[in-house]
Length: 102
Image (cartoon, rainbow, N blue to C red; front, side, top):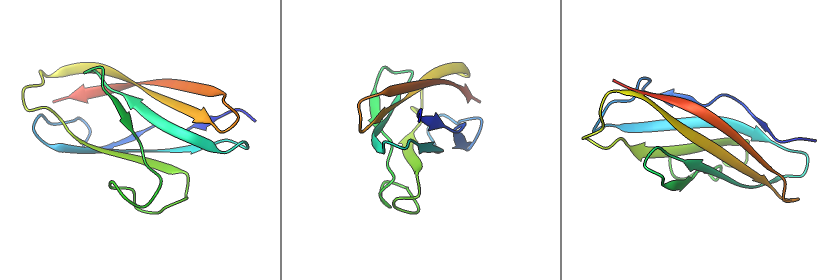
C-alpha cells in the first residue's frame, strides 16, 4: 500500500510571527512508518513525532506532530513547506503544503 498523508492541521492558522505553531497530520502505510520530516521555508529539516512527546498527544496513533516557534521577523505572506514520509520498506512520499503568515 502507498503512504497516505492527510492534510496538515495548523494551530493557529494563519501562523503568527513570534508565536508557537502546532501542526498535525495522520500518516499511514501498511509497511509501517520509519520517519516523518517537515522541510520548512527556512530550509530546515524538522522531525514530526508520534511518540506522546514534543506536543504529540497520543503515542502510536499515526498522528504526527510538530511544534515550532514562527520566527518573529517573518514577513506576512504565503510560504511553502514539504512533508516527507519514509516507510520502513524505504518508499518515500512527499506532500507540499501552504503556510499562511498573518
